[in-house]
Amino acid sequence: AQSVTQLDSHVSVSEGTPVLLRCNYSSSYSPSLFWYVQHPNKGLQLLLKYTSAATLVKGINGFEAEFKKSETSFHLTKPSAHMSDAAEYFCVVSSGYSTLTFGKGTMLLVSP
Amino acid sequence: DAGVIQSPRHEVTEMGQEVTLRCKPISGHNSLFWYRQTMMRGLELLIYFNNNVPIDDSGMPEDRFSAKMPNASFSTLKIQPSEPRDSAVYFCASSPTGSGANVLTFGAGSRLTVL
Image 1 (cartoon, chains in turn green, brown):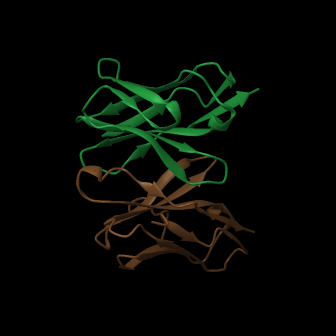
Image 2: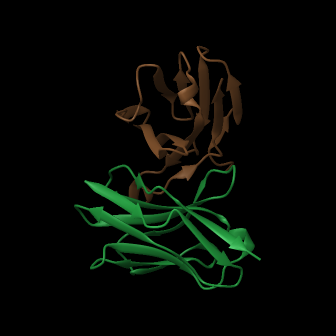
């Protein structure tokens, strides 16, 4: 069995300040973990993925995430938010070749 | 590649009518997924196909929903009869086999409104 919990439904930041979107997962096997982003009225786009290589994963648009097995976490960070980062972000877990389990999403709001 | 292509982008229909949503996956991708997104329930997997064969349809809400994949380049999701509670955005996604098997590429979605 697998599950994912996104700890915040909304996160608000000011442009230029750091972003932290929190995600905890549960998995019976070594998981693959992903972050997807969805801009308004668009489909989901892959930001980054972790598949048991380096624990710090770099993605597109300056985002990165760190896999912490001891904490069963996979938090998404960015040093400096940009207005174009405003979107909904989904943390996703998969074990082996099972289907993906999506979190409920975190809406990131960026103010000028 | 044009990505995953879905049609129609928007559909407004009346309760009781048949709705057909269409999807063209990325060429060479062997797995295809249908998801439904609502505010209340988030993203739900409805069904997925591997090599055109339905593997898991446990997420299909009820018999009013059906999905087909007659060939590697086309899939449909049909709702008959439609109900207001079916209003949602329906996404199609595809993925390759092999090491990238779990990386999904999503289409832009079909927004369905049932009056």
